[in-house]
Length: 197
Image (cartoon, rainbow, N blue to C red):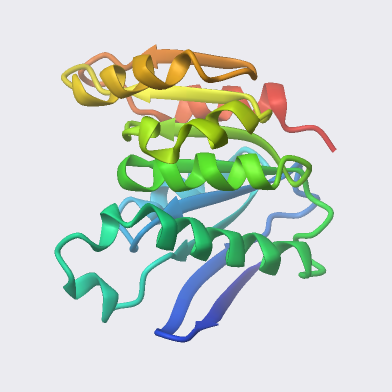
């Protein structure tokens, strides 16, 4: 089943897609500032593995006109909290164990939200991103297991992780992808280990 979802904000609507296979084993929230072409393929792969998926924009079309919009961690984090509220109050999603899959710019916001919603968010995977921008308090408070994936030629995200790692109290692992590797197999394996009803 596919549902289209709209979340109202004071700056406009955020649009998303919920994919629900029969008897889902959990829910993966694909955390993006705006829709990417590969989101559909990512969702399809998770759904083929038995997970429900929610992909939703965290920024409106108007907000994306600003050059630094995707760097605004407080705004992205607040929008993500609004999405988590939506999940918590939705009959199709509220009982499913929840994992966050963030990419690049949304990784710091995902860490902040996982720290604030430590009962709701069961696991987190980030593909790149400067997670030290989430703040020391969030890094220290987060208990959800964290997987950090780095592209083979990414030097910035591993350096940011090293700065953040001393503050991480919970379970965390890193994995550097080979040049042709896709992140999905490692992420799916992580969620299979850590998403439990």
